[in-house]
Amino acid sequence: MGFGWKDIVPGDPYIVYMGKPISPSDLNYVTQLYQPLIGPLSVSLYITLYHEHMIDEKACINHRSLMSVMGTPLNQLVKARETLEAVGLMQTVRIFSEQGNQLFEYKLLPPMLPTAFFGDDMMSMILLNRVGKSRYHYLREKFLVRKNELEVKGDREEITKGFDEVFSSIMPTELTIASGSETEYFLSQMESMYPAKESYQDMGKDGSSGIYFRQIDPDFVFLEASLPKTLGKSRTLGPEICELLKELSFFYQIDDMQLSYFLQEPYVYNDHNELDAARLRWFIKDWYLRSHQGQQPVVGQKAVLQPSTESEPIGGGQSREQEHKQALSKLSPIALLELYQDGGKASPADIKLVEELTEHYKLVPGVINVLLEYVMITNNKQLPKALIQKIASHWKRLAIQTVDQALEQAKQLYHDTKQKGKTRKETTPKSPSSRNVLKKDELPEWVVRQMEHKQIPSNEQQEEVDEHKKKEALELLRALGEID
Image 1 (cartoon, helix red, strand yellow):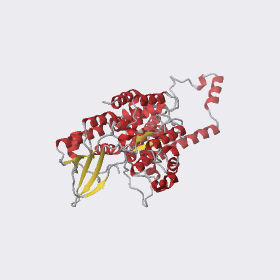
Image 2 (cartoon, helix red, strand yellow):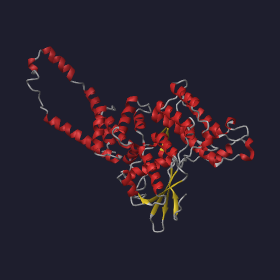
Image 3 (spheres, helix red, strand yellow):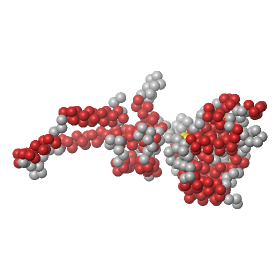
Image 4 (cartoon, helix red, strand yellow):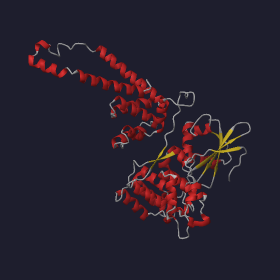
């Protein structure tokens, strides 16, 4: 749904309660295992709400007070809350009173146990990708080596964000696990030293992780019809298995037809002819690795669609400029670079440059896309690092946060650069100074002939140059919204 002032305002009250008791060990799991995935602001919000509940479990506080305590704007708090919802640490319900006011219920949930966390393909692999092998080894060793709800009357609306609404499953571009590679050996060694085999018992019979999905909706009627006839009357999919299929479908990007093939495999059923969640998960993972040359899928946070300041055209259609803005808002910077390379993989230098814009300059993905596209169009598809850093610093000082703001700055920068070029051309002397250049009649005749031969291009060459410049200028003006 995203943040909007129509959905929540600082004066809206909220209450906090616990879905289950949260222990100090649970808080430790949140800070050590979840924080690399969801960021410090989301963890800070979780702990703040936890302690508010511990102080007064019946307290009804407004969001303005929370903003003051955390020193954070409301839109960032909403984003942090949605991230907590996506990883299963919070559920949110909005309650509408008869007077038209609204109240939010924040239900804090305990994190997964370490065995469940490390046994989950998604969570474990994201953690490894974020913290690196050394820290992952440390965490796995430390955590796997053994050592009342308030009722408020009113209309209830479940608005908890699903995992697939905050994160996106991206085809492999970052983490490569090739057969016989160092990473494959490392993971095998970790599983041998600190096994997480108890994870499915901790998570439940189905092996689900506590994360749920809103937008992933396989056709379960079709999938049940695809189950082997040997199952007899038990050819049904329980709610736990359905949630597992949603997770696998999202993480490995597989459709209903492919899922039906997996459900027909004899291997995924145990000796009692029952569908085995652990076997199904392993089978699909093994298939994916073999199909993608050992590459794991990468899960990244979705870029938020930036609001447009322009109204939509009559009839519901979108102009080319609006479609361009939405594309810049949705795409990740790496995906944008790969589009400009006809699908070719971005170079390590380009990826490092994008990471620097994200981490050091704190620019949002949509703004980074505008910056990269402007520099590429005005520099013959090149990405001069010094120029990009200069513009990024300027935009950071201007607090550019949206695609619209970035496009306006790009247009202004283009016009300023063009105006400087005109001024420089007008102030440049039409004839060279006699101190620097010899007069033509003072040069030997053979030098004059050679200079004239080199400097005067043919008519065909001049036309090709003019046509190329004209094409580049039209492309730039179109991208900047100057022409359709």
